Image (cartoon, rainbow, N blue to C red; front, side, top):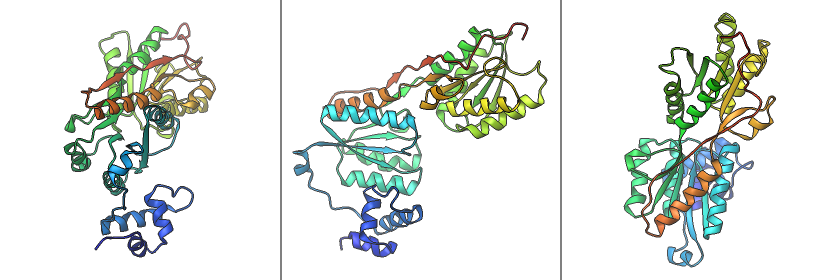
Length: 341
């Protein structure tokens, strides 16, 4: 017997309107998180599948692309999605967007939902989890192309649009060396994901083997709080002569956390310590001082990924594209003061 919206509503003890909002991703500010999870669980348990318009009829209207994101927050993802949207409109595509909030049940549900909607292609922004493999293989076996944004999925040999993370770290580290700094600190997110690992590798490639350079690496995460705590702990315990004169942070948020810690210790940026970030988020320019950082071409990642997907849908061979980051110089870095090591 076919499972209906009413069946899901009954299982979750909510109205059919609430079920519709959750399953169509229109629940923001209308449905609580606990209720949303209950609806998703009920839909999965009942193996609910929506009644989708026949593919042939839909094809007369538009080509549909599925976009699955881990979240939809912050200027980084917003710029990337804008690039996708602009390219899709120009190419005559319609985009179906879902966010799974890093919940495995949500990933499975939304991938199944896009399968039922018979999308013509799929864009993924997510560090790969092996549990997704069977779900993605089904798309590939049906010749529905997939392009990954910013993360490689080697297990499936999927084409991707990447940014050269090591090159970005090279730019940041070399810039600090060019300013005369020889005692450097890297705030690393290598335990977070591949991007953090590649940025740390890039830092090491520049400083290792340099006998005139002293370098430290502290493990943090992408956000400001852990960076603030790590920098405060280091700079409050080592002697002034041993303090790093420059910090390369794994992200803009981590860089701002470092600056907050330095201010608490009455150290000035950039007069006493230079700080450089990574990503070039909107608040990097608005901070005081303006944050020197490595900019990822976020809009281009979205735009190029959509163009690649169209080429694949049209039967063309496509390969992974690696975009170049650029250094954006603002006010948070300065030449090392004379007399300092």
